[in-house]
Image 1 (cartoon, helix red, strand yellow):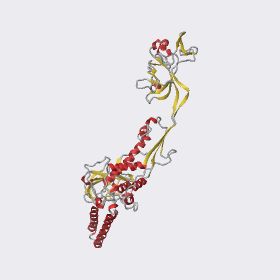
Image 2 (tube, rainbow, N blue to C red):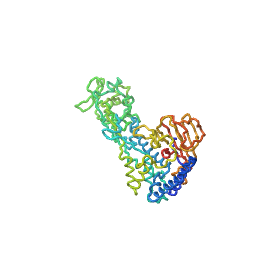
Image 3 (cartoon, rainbow, N blue to C red):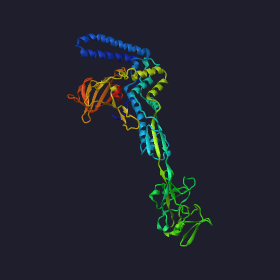
Length: 557
């Protein structure tokens, strides 16, 4: 049931004409009288009442038709001007918009994927340098409001019917609206008017100087406490670094910062850059070997009189007059020439040491929320108010949504018996609604569900939605399917009244005396629930143009 069904072939354009309404109303009236007569024919007093009933029904029907024809209201405007498929597809698309937004929000709250989550909202990931220490969702000192999700599918259906209704047309030319790309654009528009994702990346992270510094390398060359590197450390102009050299020996502290060619990149202040992270600064520095304050190690000394460097080896003084790189030596490395003087086995390599001067202190918070710029009711009212015949559209919307009589007005598509005992289907609490699951923002949710899960009492007896056959019984999963060909959906006018229909019930078992292949009568008790929720799926062959799942709330009493 979770697969997304598409039509087998295009659905033909269909009108909702007043004459179709008249025909359907008369047929419904006659069917009611006939049922009363057939079931109660033996009761004499009801037989006497039949003429009275016929007269009253006929009067009511013609009154509604007259009202519809003269003022675009009453019977014609008392039902959704759309088929169940189109209403259900609109519900699916709107809930998918909410589901997709929620998935991105969930990603923002993931420590492993938060950057991609923000990037999906248009954030520049180059500015998101530090992983937050804390994620602050919803109401906070930054966003002083709660995230709200207030979708109501009855309001959505009623809005679309009022939006698409042609109040300038005669009743003979009233068309059903159909779900298409324009409807998708409209739903995206009202969704975006209602909701906005907001975030604040508060990064107070900084470098903090260590005391004392951490050192690697030192002593004399022969002791091996220096690290070796190739000699090609030279000046790079127009690069994010000043020098680079390739270590022959390196430790894990520095190796993470090498570029793809194995080089370390350094600023003119000897600071090591992270070649794997856009050459950002690190807390490490290459040691400057130009001078040394001691006397026992072959470091460079400075001769202030001659403004030169020198070192002593075996009582012999070696002067160096360079500052920076002169094609042979680099001032932040012990040069190959001097390395050879100190230790001939290290010829043609440089020696270097390094130290850690700074530690990065992370202090970062990510605030995020969903701002409701308008309520669902406000978005609908604004949209309808901006259109022609705005007063009539708003009245039509109020009529459909049940604002005047919430106990009975459901769009008047209800054709099938409510399977549960007691109140109408709209009055039951749902564990899961039709469409993409969305209960509240930033909570885990499943994808598409093309049915409803209704809270009930374990052991509630279920009634057949129509006279049909039990076509499938799955005792392992406690599922039952009932099928009837050519179910009459009275509201749909001539040419679309009969549809093959399957109703699948989960968390239910047959009552004793019923089995697969049996026929059950309309409203007859035939099964009972096995859990505290029962699941309904209604699958309809829409006029022979393909099987579609529809929201059961559209057609159940």
